[in-house]
Structures are given as C-alpha cells and as structure tokens.
Amino acid sequence: MINLHGVSKFYDTSNVILRDINLHIKPGEFVSIVGQSGAGKTTLVKLLIAEERPTKGRIEVGGWDITGITSSIVPYLRRQIGVIFQDFKLLPKKTVFENVSFALEVSGVHSGKIDQVVPQVLNIVGLANKFDRYPSQLSGGEQQRVVIARSLVHRPKVIIADEPTGNLDSINTDDVIEILKKINEFGTTILLVTHNREVVNHLRRRVITLANGQIISDEAEGKYIL
Image 1 (cartoon, helix red, strand yellow):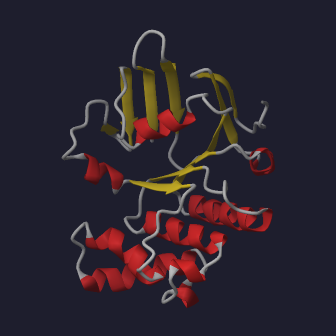
Image 2 (spheres, one colour):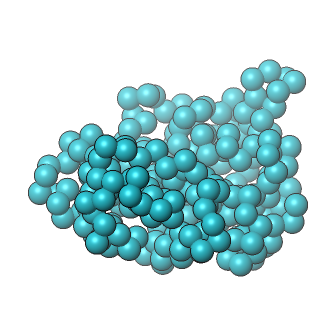
C-alpha cells in the first residue's frame, strides 16, 4: 500500500530532514508514526501526499509511483488518500453537509451522487443529525468528525491523520480514535501521526518511531518509547 525506498529529503547538506527511509505499510494496517518535534514526521506526510518531492529515493502509494508526480496528477492522487489535520480547515459559512459535499463538488461529482454519499459518511462519524449545523455550532470533537467525514467521501484507500487529536480533550480524543479504528475495520489503511503517548500505547498496533530524520524503531505492537 505504501512503500518508501531509500527516501531522503534535504535542502542542503546541513539541513537533512529525512535520511534513507525504507518503509513498507501493507493494505489494511493501522500504523502510528511517532517522534519528537523536528523528527521528520510532518515532512513524511508532505511526501506521501505529494506536497513535497523526495531529494532521493522512490515513493509508492496505492500502486502509484509518486516520486516525480506532476502537479496536474496530484488531485487524482489526493482522491486515493484522505487527509485529516490538527486544524480543522472547515469553511465557516457552510453547514456540515456543505463542508463535506464541497470536496465532491470540486471533483465534478453530480448532485445525485453527493446526496447519496454525504449522509453515509456523516452517519459513519455520528453526525447524521447535525448536517445543517455550522462549524461554530459544533464542539471541537464534532468539527474533527466533520473533517474525517470529508476525508472519506472519495472512499480512499489510505487515511493519513496528522495530529488529529492535538486540539481535543481526552473524551473527544477517544471518540476520534474509535472512529479511525472503525474505518480501519472497513479495510482502509490508517497512518496516524501523533505526539499522544496514551493513544499510541492504548492502540497496541504497529508503531514506527522517527528521530533525527531516521527510523529508529518499528514494532508490530509497539509503544511510544521517546
């Protein structure tokens, strides 16, 4: 599902962000990527969604070699990868339904399909009864669930969640992680990038630890060791 072969990212010899990363993530895995600030986690995410290009090495996502992907192809890649960020990036003047449907509208999906898909994904995240609310009328946890719903509309093969619980309390954190686990049970590969030690240790799933731009640990049922 995700393969990195000898991937490095640097801007000059004194500013190496990632160094010789070799990584294989199988379809349907739930993997946590952990490490302290500056370890290279954010850059890894940017490489996987083709926001950045590797300096060296090769990257494959969902069977695509995206190493030198052109800008015109990136939107098609993004439909295969759902992305959830810490900051919700919701449109404040659009309702929950409109925020989620917008991701389909910009891809040219017709209204009949939108009316079918949006209620389905809102039901998955437990917001079917709040489709007409605006972001300001939702709690932080509910806003993040809208983001998750939005990430699901294209039925992606992979969900990359970059610090999805960073702005949430423990109760909402648990809710978001449970939703991600449910999505994973449907067969979607989940890549969770997080600083949250309790979340990682409770999941008891595969944990990859980055430090100084390198993988220092890869454990099948690991813990947050830093």
